[in-house]
Amino acid sequence: MRAASSYTVPRDPRFAQLEQQDLDYFRSVIGDTGVLTDPDALQTYSIDWMGKYEGKCSVALRPKSTEQVSKILAHCNKRLLAVVPQGGNTGLVGGSTPVHDEVVLSTAGLNRVLSFDAVSGALVCEAGCVLEQLDAHVGGHGFTMPLDLGAKGSCHIGGNLATNAGGLRLLRYGSLHGSVLGLEAVLANGTVLDLLTTLRKDNTGYDLKQLLVGSEGTLGVITAAAIQCPPRPAAVHVAYLAVPSFATVQQVFVRARRRLGEILSAFEFLDRGSLELTLAELDGVRDPLPSSAEPFYLVVETSGSNAEHDYAKLEAFLEEVMEEGLVADGTLAQDSTQVAGIWGLREGISVALRHAGPVYKYDLSLPVGKMYELVEETRARVAGLPCRVFGYGHLGDGNLHLNVSTPRYDDAVQARLEPWIYEWTAAQRGSVSAEHGMGRMKAECIGYSKPAAAVDVMAQIKALLDPNLILNPYKVLPRAALAGNVPAQRMPAAA
Image (cartoon, rainbow, N blue to C red; front, side):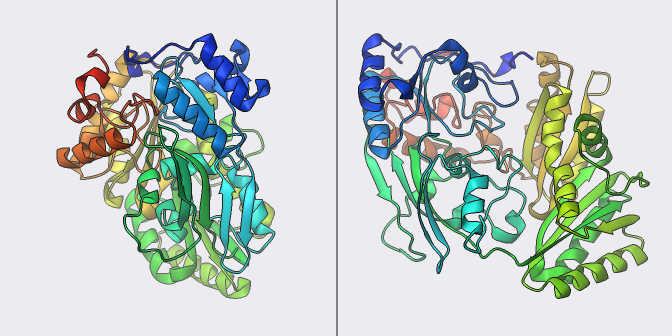
């Protein structure tokens, strides 16, 4: 599977080439085992999870403390060595991999839980902690992480924060902007920004941590975080429903919000193609409704404190929507194994798409009523090309995952899709990035979702915090925006 060539950009000639003196310095700071130079070992750090975005880094660094990160960045800033912060490398827009020969700074060694307050639910941990392991840790105290992703077994909390990851239960717990209490981060010049408070209220000056959440490693490297964890629900129930049309999907969603109210924690949809692909590509995944052949399926989850009450409420909701013909068929999970099976199907779609071959992935926020209209229009647009189009996502927060599967990455296919998909989204006043971030894929596309004045302010902030532009270059902001805010001698040469 070759990387997608259309996302390449020229190397910024201002950046220095890695030299032996740099390697010697890094080894003096983090030791020989923390400096990886073996080409085979570096392959993992150079290419993304999908095999779509690939660079050629010469070194990957694995510091184990904030102090070490600070020394590394201070050196790189002085030497003009570009740096790519990398967590679990599970991103889908090329944000965590090098574009050229940047130094990869892995947070994998920053993996300690520093504290947990079992009264307030405040977790303090380092950026390299794996999300699933954190959930297990706080689960032992009766709490849960406010974020759940299909990649939870390998993604890092620092990367989750850097991309403001949304996930499956944003409907219930909101975004990470609302869950983060504090951060520790290192700026490009090595300055440690200690904002690691666990206070729920702190109205002293600007809330700087919120600048770093969603900044994708372009403003600073997050090294630790304080997260507000909600109590773990005592009762979780899941329904899997077959629905005859997308208009009906919307009606069921409205009914679910009214009937299930505060216990509704997730409302996911997938089309028939996504279901069939996942069943075909993944072993161990079962169809919860094997006799159904409807075009749409829903995963509806409730989370609460009273199992009997919640189950009765969900059962009554299901009976109501089936009697009214809104749902053609449905099932309620009877135990934790069935719950896991239904979620395994939903979470497995992205993995199944990867197994099927190269895929163009689009993560979009749209008015709910427009979500599947884009899927249908995309199918029409790529008619005649060797493409399959799939639509699924988080209906509860208007987040569509549009996927176009192809035999190989093909510039002609991409030209048919982009910028048309972004233009279509902008026409609906949607967002070209709901939760995946901008990364390398959409660095020139922010104008479809943000006005020029807002982009200019973002570029000013970037120039203030990283005047040499060494942090995650070629990502998030377009070159033209940076050109207006950074002196010419520090700007990349034109393509």
